[in-house]
Amino acid sequence: MLPKRKPHYKFPLIPITLFATFFSFLFLYYYYAKRDSHFTEYSQTKSHTLQCSSQALALSEKFMWYAPHSGFSNQLSEFKHAVLIAGILNRTLVVPPILDHHAVALGSCPKFRVVEPNHIRFSVWDHVIQLLRGGRYVSIAEIIDISSLVSSSLVRVIDLRDFVSIWCGISLDLACNNDPKSQSSVSESLKQCGSLLSGFHGNIAKCIYAINEDCRTTVWTYHVDGHEDGMLDSFQPDEQLKQRKKISYVRRRRDVFRTLGPGSKVESASMLAFGSLFSAPYKGSESYIDIHESHQDQRFLSLMEKIKFLPYVPEVMNAGKEFAKTTIKAPFLCAQLRLLDGQFKNHHKATFDGLRQKLVSLMQKGHLPIHIFVMTDLQRNNWTGTYLGDLTGDAHNYKVHFLREDDQLVMQAAKKLTTAGYGQRFIPNSDSRIGKKYCSNQILPDVLLYVEQTVCSCASLGFIGTPGSTIAENIELMRKFGSCSS
Ligand SMILES: *[C@@H]1O[C@H](CO)[C@@H](O)[C@H](O)[C@H]1NC(C)=O
Ligand SMILES: *[C@@H]1O[C@H](CO)[C@@H](O)[C@H](O)[C@H]1NC(C)=O
Image (cartoon, rainbow, N blue to C red):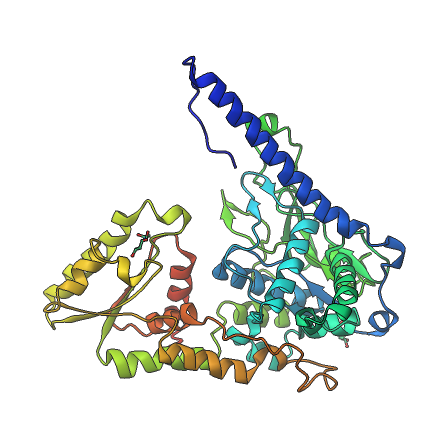
């Protein structure tokens, strides 16, 4: 996005403005030309060769995947929606890895400016290959404990890598094979599988149905008789936006079961591909998914209940609890302070004020020093000069605790996680894979954020989070569900 410029009318500035504009256009031109060539490259994979392999078509099981994006909390909320929809449609959910923070972005639903579903699926596929190449692939099911969901048969899941090896007949692990001879044929097969799964060549009968509706046109609902199907949603682009952006979107409510379930034209497709599954409340409506407990179906209700809160895996939970018990060793307050990222960097004062007030009230109750566990994106050596610096400097009144990525406890948790291999735990048809490992370059996953949240869920003196932060919301949820004591 180009920054807003104040208009300059003074004579000497005109040439500069002209040049700047010229170069911006040049830059944009190259950017789009480059991006398009990237997509063209994929579209050129001969479309007649693009079809489901016979082994994919032979599977009686039907699958579903989607495009996760943005930060971790967002990816978690999309995952919950995915579990819910997969359960409703009785499709096996293809479980994705955790994507790097903001490696893939959606855009803005309220502004009707989002990345097309095909393109976002595509970016996700690209990023997945990058994660594999860099030895950084961690399934979201390695971090989030879905064992109770799976064991209760409310939903069936399969790891993305295993799905691809069965469905596309290619091992994703080959992506990190550096042998130049096999590399080009591997790249070609990966490219084909990626374009197929992204729906880049449209829908292919019995093989894939790729959803092209997004939050600009659709809100997914689920009702016993599908009575909302096709109705207009209460949130529509306003006239001003329509004129200014020349858009003609109309948002309709669509029943997910009627549109995509048994009896629909989608039923026979082996794979159902969603784009983003992100949704947020907006102006009395939901931006994309509006499914509530209005349905009577018992299975559905149990599923709704289960996805309200999905805990971290025991390796993460235990590390957090251990830190609270053996390092802090006292009742403590948790402060989660988002200070650097995007919308948060201009609100330091408000963020610190909440903490300050809480400390004043704790101070009145006595028991000094007050133990505080701090999780923040501001690095420790930058605390000086901030309120955090004041707190650490006042050892008489406060004892400040924090964790770092390279702390023993955090590293240990990461190691245990890698050994446990949750990603591989829930896989049907996987005999041929067990023990097979092509990627020897796997590096330890970064679990700091998850361990920190667990510590905060154990803070008995209370929790102060950054207003508007999704991390804070997740911690509140963990505390509400008593995840520290379970
Ligand atoms: C759900 O899918 C499974 C596996 O494809 C199938 O065996 C089962 O009968 C389906 N259940 C319903 C209620 O359609
Ligand atoms: C943190 O401190 C380093 C130097 O120690 C400095 O280069 C950096 O800009 C600081 N970052 C912030 C966000 O203040």
